[in-house]
Amino acid sequence: MEQVQPPLPTAEVLKRIHLGFVQIFLNASIACIIYTRRLIKRQSGCFLSRNVSQLQFPGSLQCLEKFSEVHERFCSTEWDPCPGSIESQEFKVLQRGAHRCADDILDLLVSLSHTY
Image (tube, rainbow, N blue to C red):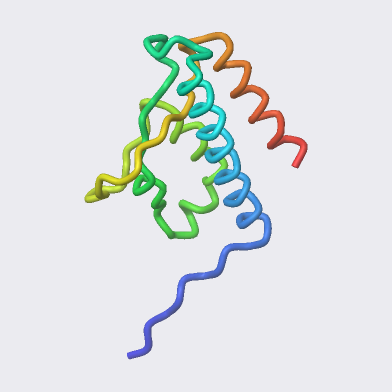
C-alpha cells in the first residue's frame, strides 16, 4: 500500500513560516545584546531562556498555517517545547509585559511583520 504524502504548504504559508523564524532570530539577537551588555537589568523578568532544540515545530499543515502565532508563543511563558527535546545551546528572548523597553522592541518586531 502506497503512503499518501501530506499536502505541501502554499506560498503564503511558507512566507509566514519564514517571517516567524526571522522574528524569533531578531528577538533572540536583540535580547542577547541587551542581556550581555546589561542594558536592561537581568532581574527585570523580561528575559526567557530558550534552547536551539526547542525550535523544532510540528510539521503538519494545520500547525504551519498557524505559524504566525509561533513568535508570540515562543517568546512567552506559554511555550511548550517539543517533548523529548534535548538540551542544546541556550539563548535569551524578550518577553512581553515585564519591561517597557522590551515591550517597545517587541512592538517594533510585530510592526515589521505587518509591512512584510
